[in-house]
Image 1 (cartoon, rainbow, N blue to C red):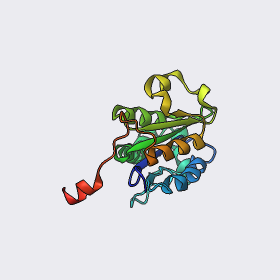
Image 2: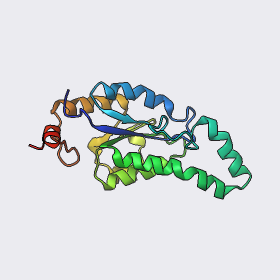
Image 3: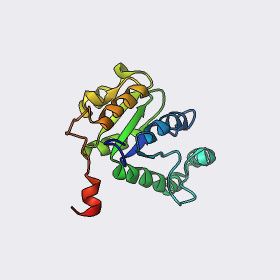
Length: 184
């Protein structure tokens, strides 16, 4: 295994308004990341023992009904666990892979991206509409070398990082796990 072995990636992208609730691209990229020895945190398949995080297709109707009925306090109360879990997932991740789709609202996606950027984590971005469609503010925030045309370009880039061919040390920092585990 290479440099990415043991790294944790959070898959950041729209869920609420995505036609497939954001599941499709995540299911496509996850096995490709795992082949490199990485771990994946997928917010559409949360790794938690909590049974109910008020998210997903089974609760979409309830969320809409709460809005329709003006029960905004209840929506806020129930939704806090979703937001808290997703932001904690960003904290735990070594890097983010961010899918942008300007056909849908992406409020949580943007919050996660900007919070992770403050930690100077590697954030790899691709967009359904293509690299030239990405909002200027993203380019002001994320180094352009981390903005890609599509998922395949991200995977190709990660293979270079994994092999040591890409050695940018401004955002990629690798631990010597032997030193950590053995204390040497």
